[in-house]
Length: 335
Image 1: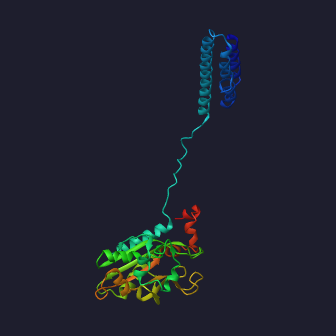
Image 2: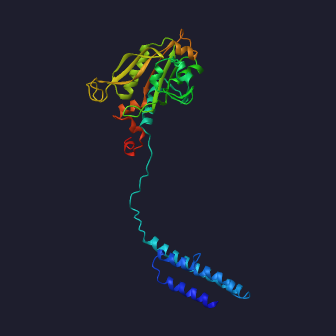
Image 3: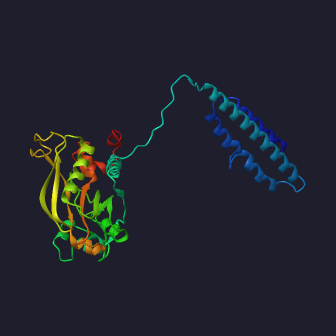
């Protein structure tokens, strides 16, 4: 019994004499203190001894195990201390600046648009992105048989529930709960069944504007759009309106801004016209007022819309809308 214990002890201490690193210790630990090491297998031999010798051999093995473990841990601690001393810290080196997140360019442009309109007296309203057919179409003078529905390429969830195709439903909800005067914008996400390309995306952002009061005219609409253009792109930007058609406004128009790339001289971006198409606008249709519970004989109003993505593309000279959603850090770090 004593010979077995002394043999294990002497072999262990002889082995650790030649250890030069912590990595060299691991094989020794496995050989002597592992689950199938010499100490553990020696415990299996207790059953071979007479009953009166078993407690003494078990106690001696436990003491041996503690002795070897303490020696192993002390040696391992010495190697760790040596390793720590070898690590040289140059306290004169400058610190590493932590990476700071920043706003996405679409959020930056959306915030700027909000600030401009708030400074003009507009409030900011919000509405659900999952809408009913009534708010998205019916209340906006687009009945089920109207061909304008085909222009939207709607993503339907059920026959009556859909992902909103524009932020115009918010104006109906606001007019239902608030009596005129109303002066609001509704920024938000919208969805259409579009195939992604340089200028189209099934998911994009819009800002809807609505003003309702007594005596509102088309001239008021033109003044607000002109003020926005000057604040967003500079005092030299001009605005032009072209006759158009939208079911929810009458009369309706599309409006353009002077091309910010060529300052109206004509270039590849504006197809040599000197103008960049922005979006549509017009006077609120009487049928829309009726659907929202507003008296069209008493009140008039105008509505306009614009794409936040489109404004951002113009502002930052970006020619592909898809890059906004690719999460390319090289692109996002520029903002």
